[in-house]
Image 1: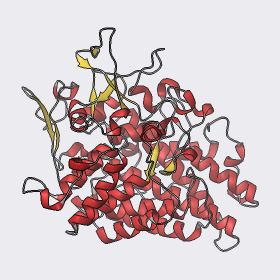
Image 2 (image 1 turned 180 degrees about the vertical axis):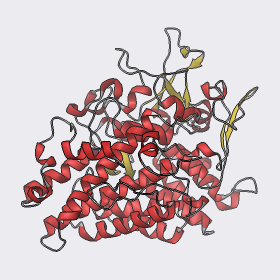
Image 3 (image 1 turned 90 degrees about the horizontal axis):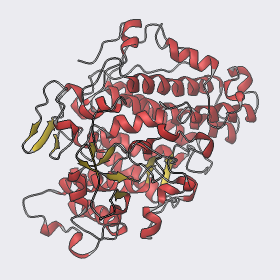
Image 4 (image 1 turned 60 degrees about the vertical axis):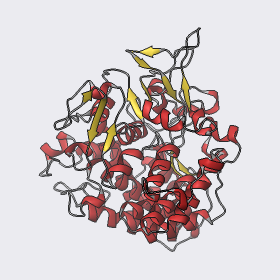
Length: 491
């Protein structure tokens, strides 16, 4: 039966953060009889993004989206399935792929239970909660299709993931095309934006949250004017602001989402949800007390890019581990440069609330779309706004008249997206959806372990090139799903 394990999880429930109230698992007819029941059911769907143990959804999502990229360098072999995402040696029974698939569809089926039972127009409060479930369903479909389906720009007819509209799994649900999934996501988000009228905190859906995701979806679809329009809606809403103070900016991961005006939407982790060594940040950092694995570092290429401007505040997210003499320590011969975007919330080393959407991305979405519409000056103006916020000025800012012929406005935008959104799961897809190679020209285990077919890694100099049409740009559908259904596997 398709998604049999998912159905079991939806029926029996899952462990939520801090012991979620079991009302999120009430039968639909009970859950929607009152606002309290509907609120609890909806909260349960949010909780599925953060619930579970070591292999929780958020951890897999961020690792699988970021680790194929060139901002990171793995310091050695590891038994964690992140190894296969980083080396692109994906497995058909890869634990991370299996879990993100299962947990993602748990969110979808949980949202479907509410959507199936709640009629719009009964009250503003019920409409708000209904809209939030449309948003959650769209978000999960969008995240999954970008892991298991090829970039939209490579063709609408490529296989994506099954669209789930019912609270009950379909025993023979096929894979929909990438184009069909994107269309479905857009319609869900537009419906969500129209239903949500409450200005809730940034760990819940709202009209602006749906609009922010629509900006990203349309950017990925090369519908650039629409990407601009939705970015404008969010930017001009007045609900969010770029952090201007350098200290405040460099320490935003240490604060809860509600304390960050730049955050549009985040998965909220509380002290009760802390995953300790299973946290996202545990692979990026090891505290002086020994908390965290500290095996994945900022790549030399990314650090060199940052170091072009020593005044760039974003250098504060990278921390070299030094010995008593001041030299950078090494692990397996690789220099240790920790990443601190997922550590320190509330003083807890392994706690963070990973950001899904934030205001800087809206400026950069708009900049990329403008560059593709030959509005170079406006594109560079958006880029400069982000760079000024990062503490840059003078020659570190861009002018159309000074581009010469060696780079385009789009080159600059993509480089700024890399700098600003590093480690947040954007970089690999930003390159591949734009038809660009991922070139890892720096030392790391990726050049020592050539296990992905067709990737020829050279160690002199250390380089690995991943073209956008490589089969392992996407992960395999979990093998158990293939065995239980007639779904076609990724090549």
